[in-house]
Image (cartoon, rainbow, N blue to C red; front, top):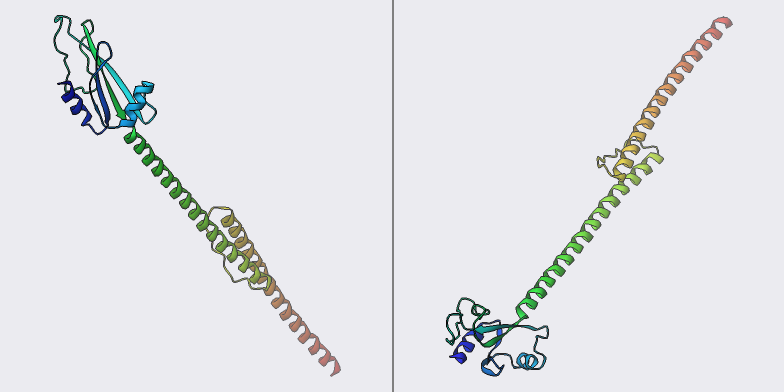
Amino acid sequence: ELSRLACEYAADANVIFVAFYDAEGVPQACAIEDRRAWEIFEKEKEGDGSFVVGQKLIRTPRSEPHPTPKIEDRSPLIIDAPTGGTRLGHVVVGLSLRPIHAMQEAQGRAALFMGIMAAALSVGMVFWSMRSWTRRLNQLVDASDHICRGDLSRTIHDIQGDEVGRLSQSFERMRLVVRQRDSELRQFNDSLQQMVRARTCELEREIAERKQ
């Protein structure tokens, strides 16, 4: 019966060995799925990190002096009766930690993948930002070259609120002011030339009248 129970418990995918001992600690039945883990347990009486070991006492109920052990099917790892009865022995169950380790490795790979994706996204955003800034700065340099050549018609349109945008907006205001002053200066020069021509005509007429 104990061998059958041991085989039933060992059928669980995470159970690597099950052993039943009597009150003196002598093995009565066992089912071993991982021989290496079982040898480590027999030597060390504990797990090595790849598996854990659980042990539970098997007692008789208080009211019955020598009944057979009660083993509840609903709790395969807790094989124990109410305290106070006669100790009949104990059961040892070894559980593999491979599923937990596999889950941890999967989580680690997922975290690494997310980290790589975040780094790639950050690099892409920085690269895109640098390209955008370079393009806007090139537009600003091109506009300044036109101003140096006397061409004040090149508009600088940048409504961004960052440093490059504020610089472009200041440069555009300066361009408008310079163009306005240049226009006023041209108008003044035209008016001055007209005044000079008119005054010259008057002088020439006065000279001609005097000669007569």
